[in-house]
Length: 329
Image (cartoon, rainbow, N blue to C red; front, side):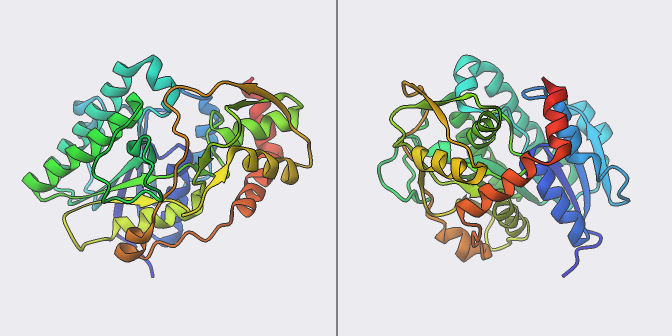
């Protein structure tokens, strides 16, 4: 199945998930425009590496700019676009506690700007990257989208709830189909260096101590990036209803201790653990019920955790990434 002629705008498309999505869409025959402000939340050389191989592709356009600048959006993104996939956001639970106003500005006003942009440009399909963090501390596992009493416990999580609700407003008023995808702990090649698997993997390679917050019993529903990309593509073509919020997870959990043990096995190195207290804003577990995604657009995560870690290890230890990491220091 090819999609030649289908034009997709991806915000945050130089990042971890967005660059994988762009690669897959180009392989399927889409025209892809990426908007990214190359924010230095982590070293931008990683983002430049993510997009370098596509810059000469005839169906790929890269635009550097900020989605908070409405005038720029309208001038630089002339379109037309059939689908908008909004992945750009200030990321991270812990940093959002230190700077909540910046997260509100970027993630809520930024999403509002894009919804206005979509309305003005006549873009009828809007896919939004939400987060499992919207569930907060919810003991009813696995988490289902029908759990409407959301109690986020970080500013980052609250901005994602706000994005979902803004989407409902624009869907209702302007007929934009809005699909909010709640991602559950995405990992794999190109993962952000601040996230646990990348951070711990690099520490293992360098013989440094790994910080373990709490007793190692916290659990995460780790989802391989390739599975997430397939879920996003499914949402891009969903047409059954005007508004949906959908979990994209792996439908199983891995404890922090198990995650570190798997890294030790795959990397062939014993971890030195530094035990630290639990962090504010962190939830004890995330666990997705993915039956709704399966029913609406055939989502089916296929990558076992160990296999995903092996693929991440192969990327992290590749020569060009090791050179990049050395230069970034």
